Image (cartoon, rainbow, N blue to C red; front, side):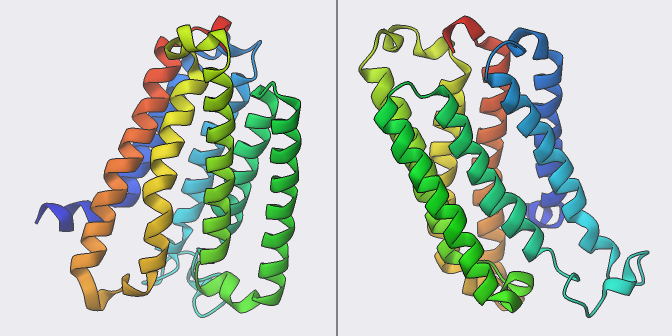
Length: 235
């Protein structure tokens, strides 16, 4: 019963968590306006806008005001999530960590990996155009997860090799890194079970929603807490 309730309202639960993190970022924006972290606040606002737009599919069915999109390529929002989440969100994190990393070799390797990821994503979409509108790209999600892990690895490596390890808990970037590490470690393997995500296997559907709820709640609450308690002098 609880899992069914969650699955029926999952979109709005996500949106509340995203709005909470974004609003917290705006409230404390003055604290970060002179640091790279200000771009993360912009990113949180982007996430809210992106997910609000993604809900357009609700108004396509049942004679909604977007019913003219029914039976067209845009009737589902796979394309929107692939473009704005699987690709652009990973690109943002790659760019963000490029800005905060200090080791030149790490920055070069991350930049190279990010370019390869973007080129690969465009290549896959061009040669699988129909899938772009009707399904997820597992390979893009997995590649994106690797980029995130690369960002996390370089960040923690630099923390361990510097005096920042003494004050790591005061940095917003630490909260961001821990959050996205846990999210992508759990989220990425689930894409391989996408074929089971259908009405014929509601047990898996409800379980997947519950797992997503836990990791997404953890991620956005960590963002929110990190914004509040961090000291920008340590970023």
